[in-house]
View (cartoon, rainbow, N blue to C red):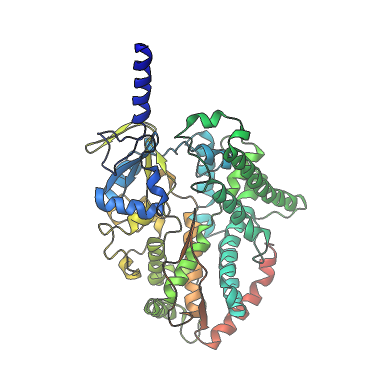
Length: 513
């Protein structure tokens, strides 16, 4: 009997230790047995809760959920010291059971650094390099931005759909060699359909964390509905990505071969270093387009509508570069002459990043940072929204002020790769070995669209109260809620040029349909 009591006491003691914070970890909020800090995330948005904890516990703090330890990095020094200098052990991904089920373990951004990940990342980085985008794919990028102006000219009330169509169309052309002619097109919707399905399936509260109850992973699907939903979600997502690949293969079968990553891969012009199944290839290609570029363009439009002085500053540069009398539309070769547009892009990405968090990193081995011991499998959190709103990182961080970036005339990729981490522009595209491989497409798309919008229109809010800058739909991607603005032509000659330019590219665009 005594032995049984001792055994039960020991088991109870070990169970109650779950969720506790080790004394060698960074400080953080008080925990409760088993749950740690999980219950506190029910009351408010995660990025706001972490921002409160940052104010109380400092630039590096920790919290727990079950057995999992989370290390939150807020200051530039710790971010660089852990995620860049220690990238060999800090570039892994958390072992997220349900996320793995939803993605089939094949999503590039969620994979751990293995041979498959390295092969896919290498190909993505090479295929989305600036040299290729600015040589082989410059015309389709410019043409899509021009069609957006034409669409806004004729149906401005549908601007939200037009923006998403243009952003997704460029990515679909680059990855698959197909563009979206309308916002109802398969190529305009497929990535949003897939991501929305995954978001609904893995949203907070839709499942019980396996970290709290490890035996759940071994129970049959009939007893764990969340497992069944996750597997069904992956089947639907794979069906979407497979259809995209099918369409490319069908086109190539009739001799229509184009410039795209999928075409190069299927045609043997490029190869993955590791042999991969068709399912893996479909998932690889499907993981390259993102839902963030269209969201960011809407964010730029929203803030510009409420800050007319920023539009005026941009007009001065645009009119000087493109002419105020015998003029043309801005193009990518004007980048150096239009630093104001680059500042607008950077400030939008800072003040309202399309994701509040980077995908979490995981330590593959224990390490130390300052006085803290960070155990193996610690989950490293990069709270992008919080970092961008921390007063120690940005002066008047709550204020929309593109001028804060005057003098930072390079694209985001240059600052992400620079050892001068103290002067990095923002962290929206991630960091280190996990920097988003689509950064160059996203930057170029946003710049082209914003430059052409400001060349053509004055953007005005509708109504006296204007637009609510804090009204955002919060999910995996944070997107502005529907808002109303007017696109007022700066003069009639710009309308004539938009019409003429669009007529000149219509046949070219049809070759990408």
